[in-house]
View (tube, rainbow, N blue to C red):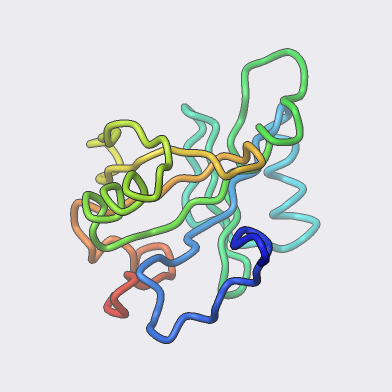
Length: 151
């Protein structure tokens, strides 16, 4: 008998409830790195928040987030990358993750930017976030759609 953890996951028969919204890279030299991604790679700035050292950059159909870190040393490799998924029903997804034994804290509210999120880690220790806009129409402002398919 094989261990279920060793078997390949089955392909989903229904559309995903979650959409990869962005991959966030945490950087020590935020301004320099931002200029490099915009000037050298040609990514389009969608949102630049210099106060919080965060930038959201359009990369074709995807998005890259650059988040400045204040630590004098570069963060570990696992702390440098974060996957951020957009979901339509944050509370429902939180319940589902908890039912699967995933350690998920209470939702974090960001009223200034208009969203709520939950934070957790994958089995390797990488940081993941699920978030939902307070106003789902905001997704269109950043070149995306809501996971349900509407803008």
